[in-house]
Length: 141
Image (cartoon, rainbow, N blue to C red):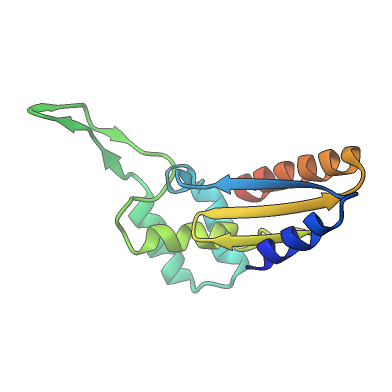
């Protein structure tokens, strides 16, 4: 609701230019780097036995594809968390929980919306480029 409120306020000012960035992390569970997750666990002071248990669950995880009667070869997955698990969404939330911006934004599950308002087009462009870069750093650090 806060993004909508800011959007309506900005729209009332005819001089403002509004840009909205919608980020959908729907495939984020597939690309979570286990080293990034380890660093997040440590930075949040998660007990060591929980860290070991969580990473053991992820390391060496294998997957295959089945279509009809055909089954692919099994492959070891080096990143991500398994879908349909309790830990997967929690791992994702831990990775992106630090993601904040110096402008109006909203996070909901795997979606983030960022609103940038200015009367200078170049300022908007620069601000959104910074935000996109920052999102990449946050997820990959």
